[in-house]
Image (cartoon, rainbow, N blue to C red; front, side):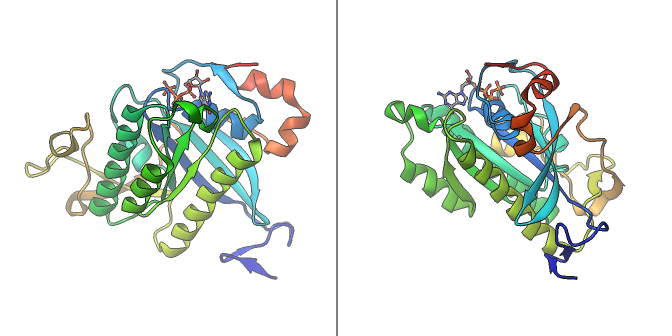
Length: 266
Ligand SMILES: Nc1nc2c(ncn2[C@@H]2O[C@H](COP(=O)(O)OP(=O)(O)OP(=O)(O)O)[C@@H](O)[C@H]2O)c(=O)[nH]1
């Protein structure tokens, strides 16, 4: 049996278990996290949304001929990253989104990348991040150049794309699949199975919250000296919505739309 990344190839037999990948979408309010997520899942662009909704969606994907069970957490931090453990300890990869017509959202994306880098350092476990400059269709109003986006991504060693949630689906899908590839590479390197995560049992006196060090709200971090392994939390202490593959989706639009509660899709 041929294999890809140590797993059986899709279609190579009934035993093929899909690769499980958790992806968290981070970024300032209004950057377009929900719009990109819904575009990827349904091929549709949304123009109205509930900014306080944080949902985790599940989608069966095929990436490089390999079946992937992809969970996407569309996060909703209030103004700054808050209670970040819910995604830091859950995700295998991150999409950090900024809106290219907002300098502030670009600066916030830098804070998110710093947060991820710090978490990787403190847990000695890196999860890949991709930086996305969203709203490419609004490029005439851009406040952030492509070069600036690329430079920020380069600083943190992550992939960079400019995208639009209201332009072509294929480009958005490509970006999500790149995130899966990045996660898969990292999972292969890691010897620790991901169903377990490291969390702290109690705060240590010497442990300074990220807030203090990086101006981020309510994020505390784990040290390896007082850790315990716990079961991964049920997919999102947020709602889980199951969505079939995007390709199948386009053929069954009506049922899909009723699943995506909280969004108005036009
Ligand atoms: N023109 C354009 N508008 C977009 C794009 N992506 C999102 N928007 C719009 O920008 C606004 C914010 O988009 P959301 O997807 O809700 O942003 P978000 O990052 O999820 O924001 P929160 O839910 O508040 O965290 C909405 O009005 C979207 O319709 C895009 O690529 N192009």
